[in-house]
Image 1 (cartoon, helix red, strand yellow):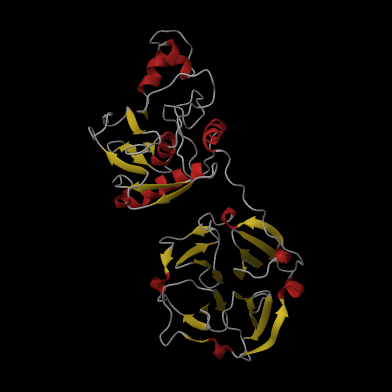
Image 2 (cartoon, helix red, strand yellow):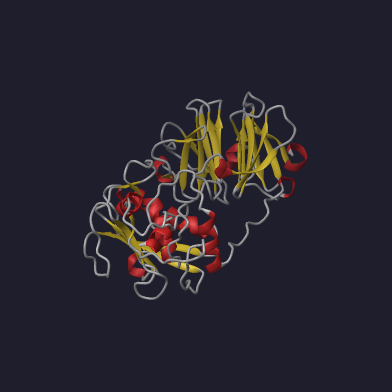
Length: 405
């Protein structure tokens, strides 16, 4: 009993005092504790490969399928950010390394679940067969991002259990995510405690460092450019640069996700509609709608919802002259006009209608002069100036670096 008290950071009275009884009543992981003299969580044998597959075989109806997957997917991302492991989600039929599911009572292993309270989940250490598999008690009041007093947060429990699935045992550090008793952490700004980082890196080493951010003046092309909230934004990879109207230099690089957390993998195109006060980002076949940095309901959605075909949008620009938005895509230079809710009929059309604008553009933007008199098309590190009133290109193949940076 004294060893158990020591492991949980309690006075070693050797008696069932109030503090000991209280800790024994708290929800916890079903994996057994291991007493250690060290402060770093104990470890077992790690996986002997860097690519680890996993499946999510079912979901808890308390959260639904989408939030269940979000919680478990994000738990994997916590660990992958500190070690050189890649986690790929696959179908259960593909014999994944780590199988996750919800069950109640007896579920064909050596640890039965006990209903609400008590054991929340358990996981098996790395290995073949059942090794790595992670089970959650379906009877628990699962929540996600609801705070410390509304059930058990699935994300936090998943981070803990996946620590076992990767080879970590319980830690005597009460602040660690691998401490055996459930403890709430801020999930929206979650930071993996140092004890857990040291433990997982002792098994797998440090994660591969991120490459240095690119230098704006050295870029040969750009993913997207747009005038948003009276500032000019340039996007490349996971980074962006911004320049306020009237200023001569850009600030950055900044992580796009520091402003729009949902856009962790960069963007293909972006535009702002001042009439609806929306900023719309495109990446691959999806689009996100924001008001400022607030994600609007139903985002992200497939481009089919606005009448586009499959595939990414290369550039997008809102036109003040008619209140329409134009989408550009494809090597052959096609464009679509977007009205109320969907692209209009009789589109796509050839970009040749734009009298001198280049095909296969990387970006397009307007509004820099405050009056939307011109649309700027960017391809590589060159740009073209289109007069919105004369309906023709008035300057061609200019140096974007020399004139804008």
